[in-house]
Image (cartoon, rainbow, N blue to C red; front, side, top):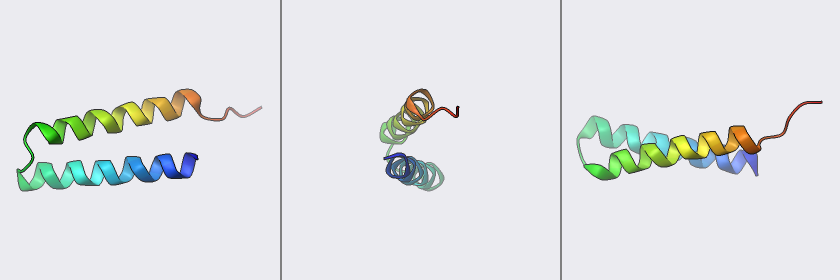
Length: 51
């Protein structure tokens, strides 16, 4: 599941970066960025911990 989550994070980040560089999407760009940050924090909190 962690691999899928990181794939989603990377795809959302790339889409955000493209939207930011090409100046389209408006508020959608920032919404995508917020979703990426939430997914990263979620993954850090629920990720496996080494023993």
